[in-house]
Image (tube, rainbow, N blue to C red; front, side, top):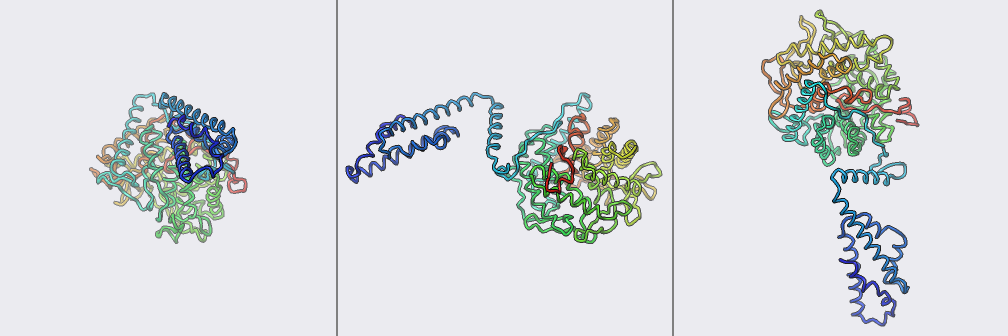
Length: 626
C-alpha cells in the first residue's frame, strides 16, 4: 500500500484531543474501526515489503526518537505530533526505497558474489551473537577456523601416476554412488543384494558410511557428493538413541570423521555434532579406575564390557584409541574433561608392571589389573601403539610422555615378538603367557607404516634400523597378498608347519576390503619414494577391480585362495574411509595432506597438529591450554 494514502488520517491527530463527550457511540465505534485498520495496514506494509532486516530494525529498533514518536502519535495533544508522524512516515518510505535498491543491486550480482556476501553476513552474526564467556548459541566457544595446508592437491605431473589416481577416484565414485542408490542413510551397503546393512557396533546410530566417507570425498574434490553428505548430517544424524554402541568404533568412525570434515571444510555443523557425540560418550569412563567400558548405552549412560573379554576386561586397542579425538574435542569445545579422561588412562597404565615391557590386551576397569597375558600388535592391541606415537606427533612433538611410552613399547615388541622366518620374512608374532604364536594378522600390517612414521624420532642411532624394519614388514605383508589366488591378503597368515605368509585355517582366509597393507605402502612411498610401493598398490587396485567390484559396489570375499571369488556382500564403511583414501594418497604428491601438518587417526581421518600445546600435563591441570 502506498505510504501517501495514510496521510489524510495521520495528519489530523487533533481530532483525538477534543472532548470525548463530543462523539456519539456510533462515531466512537467507527473511529475505533478506522484506527484498527490503520494499525493493520501499517504492519501489512512492513511485512509484505521485500525482506530487509535493515527496514524492520529501522521501524522497530533503530532509535529511541522513533519509538517515542510512534508511541505519541494520534493519542498526543501536542500540536507538533503531526510533524513527528510525517518524520516517521518519511523514515519508513526511505527505508523501503533503500531496501528496494539493495534488492535490485543483489539481483545484479554474480552467484559467487552473493554466496560470499552470505558467508560474510553469517560470520558477522556469529561474532555479534557471542555472549558472556565467549559462547555461542550452542554453548561452544568461538573458534577461529584455520585450515591447515594440503586439504586438496594438484594433479601429479607424471601421466601414469595421474591416470592411476583418477582410477581410484572413479572407484570411490562407484562405491559412493552405489551406497547412495541402494543404502542411503543405512550404516553400510550390501552391494550384491543391493540393500542397506547395519552393524550392531553402532546401535541405532545411522549413516556410518556417510560420516566415514566425508573427508575422502573432500580430498578427492567430489564436492557435490560432499555437500549431499553434509546435508544428510545436518538433517538426519541423530545420537539421541536408546541403544548400546561400541565406544571405540563410534569414536574412530563418527567422532573422527566429523572432526576431520570440520577441519577440512570449516563447516560448523561438524564441530557441533562431534562435540555432541563426544559428550554422550563420557559416561563410559564412570568406572573405579577411569578405564572406559567397551559398550555404552547412549541414553542411559550404562556401560559394560564385551562378554567374551578376559575377566570382564576392557580391550587395550579400544580404551587406548581415544586420545587423538578427545584432545581435539577439548580444543573445539573448551571442555578440558575430554583431555583429562584420556590422560588418566596413561596414569593407570604407568602404575602397572608390564610383563617383559609388553602391554597385555586385557585390563579390568574395576580392579585396574591386567587380565589374561595376551599381547598382540594386531587385533585387540594394534591402534594403542599407533596412538602413543601419533599423540606425540599431534602435540607438535611436545608430548614427551607419549613419545617415551611408544619407543619403550616398540623396543619390547622388537625383543619379544619380532621374528624372521627361514625364508627371510620378518613378522610380528603374538604372545600368550610367555609363548609365541607364529601368526601375523592383516591388522598387524599397519605396523610397517607406523614404524616408518616414527623412525625419524627414534632414540639414538635407530632411525635407519627402524626404517629397515618397516620395509621388511611391508615386504612380508606384500607376500601375504602375492601368495593367494586372488592377489588379496588373508585376515591372518602363519609361519609354522612349513608355511610362510599363508593362511592355514579356513576362518583366516577371508578379505573384507581392509586398508592396513595399503596404509603401509603409502607411508613407505612418502618416506622412500621407492617405486615398488606404488607398483604394489596398483596390484591391489587391479585385484580389487577384478574380484571385489560388483554392479552394486565393492564386496569382501570369503576365501582369497579360491580361484573365483565368493562375495560376503558387505561394503565396509572403512573401505571408503581408509582403503580408497590411502590408495589415492599413494598416487598423490607429498604436499597433499602433508605429514608435518596432519596426523591420521586409526580410521584414516586426518586431524591437524595442535599448535600451541605447551605441555600435555597442562591438559589435566586447572590451566587447560590447547
